[in-house]
Length: 101
Image (cartoon, rainbow, N blue to C red; front, top):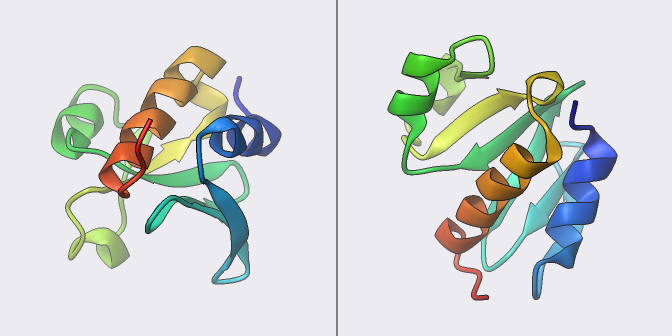
């Protein structure tokens, strides 16, 4: 089970990522927003696979009407992920947010 502390650790290990508040929640930025806590235990990230993720595992991946205008954003229930899955999602989000490894 992944936690907000895991998100922070993985994000801040990526080159150039900074943490600051967005909508009064912890958020991590590469060139642009790459991840933000949405709610307790729920993380927002960017992905090119939103439809596929939510289609195969809607208990873990979902979005709200707020996210309809941004087809790369997906919400993730952290309790459903292990560290490896979380790291893969955050690395993809980092690259989509303009980060470079």
